[in-house]
Image (cartoon, rainbow, N blue to C red):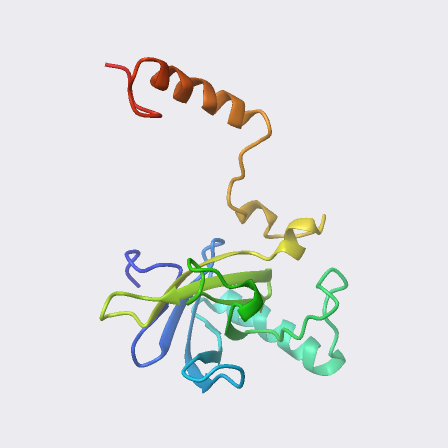
Length: 183
């Protein structure tokens, strides 16, 4: 797959490619369902298939254990209904929508590595139907034993905003635009 595609790329025929920050790559096909809450809105679901043999084996073990026991890890949130290798993309609830996230779809994916959050929206490209990002789920970040915590996006440390504000203030004092490079 070309690296020019985003981590989640859903094509017009609803085939998709999902690249996790860990490097694991999955493929599958989504099904589109009409929303029961709003006319004209849709949600999507599908199943992932790993592209690397080691991931196929680990994911098969995870799915077999889930099918046998039906248990999810204790650190998953209480209302979680996520299943191994199944992706469901739903619209952000109407009560939480803003102008910026009105078309955003969100979902969770559970692989042998852990629980991931997928955030995506319709693509403006005619070659992609939906495009998005993948990050470790909030519950993974809070779990001390998580294998995927290190893939979380970098968050500014409390001291960094003050350090970043000083150069911007200097740019303003010189009459330049904020963050402008010195001449």
